[in-house]
Length: 183
Figure 1 (tube, rainbow, N blue to C red):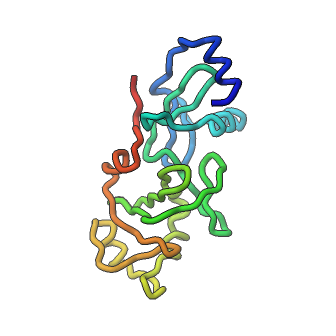
Figure 2 (tube, rainbow, N blue to C red; figure 1 turned 45 degrees about the vertical axis):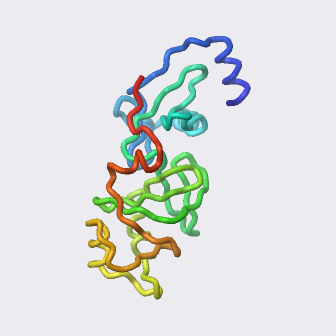
């Protein structure tokens, strides 16, 4: 907690928390009551004050008020940069660790230093192009489709990280976050 927030909480200790207004969509866009936020200054503020509490709720500190975030999928959305690095929807560079998870709909879930992240859908083609088997050969479409269905017929790797199937409903418990915080 920074000094400004600590001072605000001291001055206004009983500001009610806000639920159900702010959300993060699958493309890393902030939404206020369903409407995409476009104002660059507000987006920068949200990005700078976005974090999780000890209960796994994601929120933005607005002075002494806690504004809880409804997550459409995961707490983070990442993009692949041309140099191969990953950048979060808040602009932080991060890396992925094993395993890379693939849900039943083909969504790519990366366990990153900042937390669980959804790979932006515009980067799926580059992601799939980088997949290989243990010998470095391209992966067949059949093997990839089997993975989407929860089967692992052969090892599939992305940047030497193994892919594993997962059900999207398992993600909140697996990573310890609340997708829709409530009082």
